[in-house]
Length: 329
Image (cartoon, rainbow, N blue to C red; front, side, top):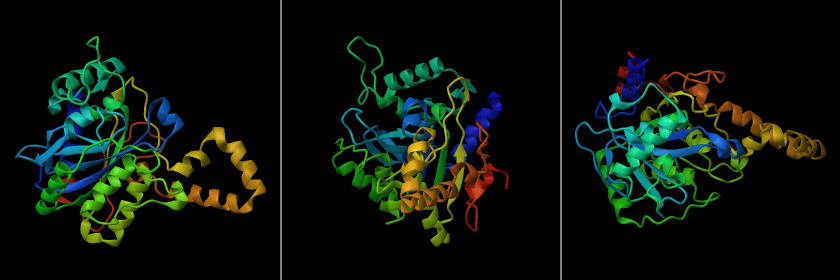
């Protein structure tokens, strides 16, 4: 199990472009988990850059040989900052080397790994509480994301020049918190980051999300954009949630889809739809649209599987060399 787990981790890094010299940006679509995920099953969105690295959690630089890149995301109430940069492997597993990743974890294991990484690397944004204990709050999302949820990556190429411009832009602008669930959420940040490289590649949906930017819509619009621009050679694959006793994450949904497919809203929605045929047709269309873009299906994993295998799928005419090497193609 441990050897298989390390193989999956190494293949994840190769698929993300770090080993073959391919500069890229990937939108990370992350499944919801926990009580808040049950209430709002829209998940989380982040951005991975294969040739950009973290000089600190608050500044960027070009990667050196052997480094795997950085994950950037907007969070709510972490040190008063708008975005935070975490190296890829710690972001996924809260460790510095692949051989340190456990093959299975308990909630206590995850808490220990996260706090150890925080004490070593993140005290600037998540300092100890007054009594010396780990602080409360959303900082836990900065390390070990793959312990809590399955993550889907949608990757397209960038150029060294684009990466340099991105670094300069983000290092020079204010990094002050302005999180807003409706207009400045994590998916808005992902949209702005991807659109820096490919303007208008990611956009909102008035139908699926009532104009609110959602993680699922970000991924869906990027896939649609890549189909109109096949030269981008979009690659899509899944980073599975680590085995263990931690509860499994659940399917990611759009804003309106969360209501349409939620049992607790089923009766009132059906009642309203019966009284207002136009609204009923609108809900039916959203149901179809929400089911059409299924990250678990796109990644080659069945919806019924709680542990989808890491399978790279060919969305366009050619599979990037890095992804093909990881899958023996």
